[in-house]
Length: 165
Image (cartoon, rainbow, N blue to C red; front, side, top):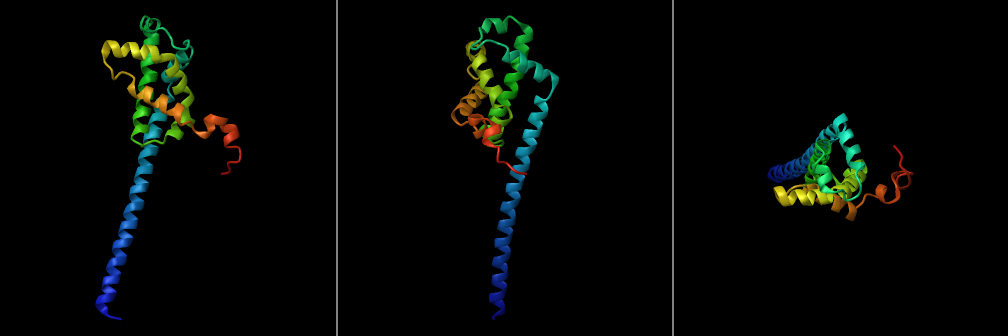
């Protein structure tokens, strides 16, 4: 076999291996980035303030009167805290940093119910301070309604009962 041919083959193999290795590294980097983003988000949601805020929002009636929220400083602060986290989640899902089914399994129910209660308030805020208020929270709630994870359709205890470690 010709030495030049062997060198060319070795060079081609080296390029293919480098491309494969680079592709695998990029995939791993994306997974790491997504896990880091999700871990940070979960950490922000596991605070006493967020838990209290979610509890307050969930206690509101469906399509709550915007003035009832606006006139109650404590409630307005709770709504801001909850919507801020859901806005962040929406952006992360949109940019495919975090998968929508993971968000749905983690807290999709809270997002859906919060939107159902806060939609009139968000719409009123948009009239006062601008059309972008709550945009990603609304986007996320709507996408979760359109594309629910299997666990939300049938319940995780049913959908994933055959799961094995």
